[in-house]
Length: 493
Image (tube, rainbow, N blue to C red):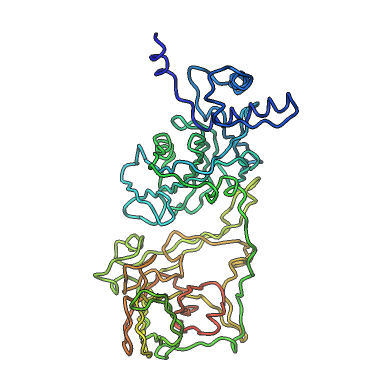
């Protein structure tokens, strides 16, 4: 075989391997001469075999390279280790004797390219740059969410810890090493209960896939096995890229505790038919940011139904069709009261169950602009606050508390198989193709009044606790400064 033919057979050395070899040469020569050695690109172009070239060849042997075939992923490997019954530690290690990874200032930008998509799924890129695959009937639930983080020089010192893991394995996905994790999932409500991490040192990336319980392990593994990272032709700076070490050990800022109770005299509450005056945000006609303090809001009507007939002819939120039984009425919500395990030696446990009827809560709100300033793309929002009123105090459920009790049984949280799980404004009649969610009024002109319908599906007992927060901040679980200043609407039934 001629030299030119041999050169075609040999794989091209990845750039990051070149850098690792140079670092190893620096280390070896530096140790031998007890001096610092700096190797420039021009030195690699010399034809004469001096000490540097010899040391580079020696470094190839130390690093365990074959002159026939090798790949970057042979130098770095992922591991997963059990901690107790249900905990794991995972991370990235280098083969013994290899040099540490040197991340350049710029790397080729890559995009996710699936080679296999499970039947019935479709994909799109979200606003954060992640790739999402989902089933068309539940576009905002479950599926597969894929993102990448930078493989940086600190990553081999970082350990990923997870609890509540019922299945874990290190395996090869196609040509890449990775780990697969499955977590305890008592709810089976299309939330993420699986995770795959793929090690991609050639691209300086770790691919992280969060996978819903509506995707089988077989489909998840096959998807990962056929995943490609394709260069876009653009370069991106690594300085500001989110890294594996930051993902493993994120900096968590301490937040102030929620204010979940307030004196009756410190909270303004109005009835349906009475006006509230609140601050709103939007834009001027020229697209400049705008705040107005005197937009008026009034709840005109509150209706309760055990079906969805009030929404006939409108587009229903995700999952609401499935909440209707064969008799046309909303099905019951089966609740599970759960006591948390420690995630290492014990798992979460259902300690009590309960069945509740679900009801549609339908509210009509009028927005009035008493000012001389038009508001374009005005954000509007209705959020339910489920409040107990007792002994002169208003109280919402403290989501940060522990050891709740129900009929003498201690529990930590509650889940259900119905759709009565959110107090955010789920249905709303006015939409504007602007911003996330589209809950904007295109324009509210001076002196103009507009009516907007809002709806929620809630558990029947919660009808007696329902207060409506019409501020744009969407606070459901605490009495924020805005709630205290602007007030709530009492829509209890």
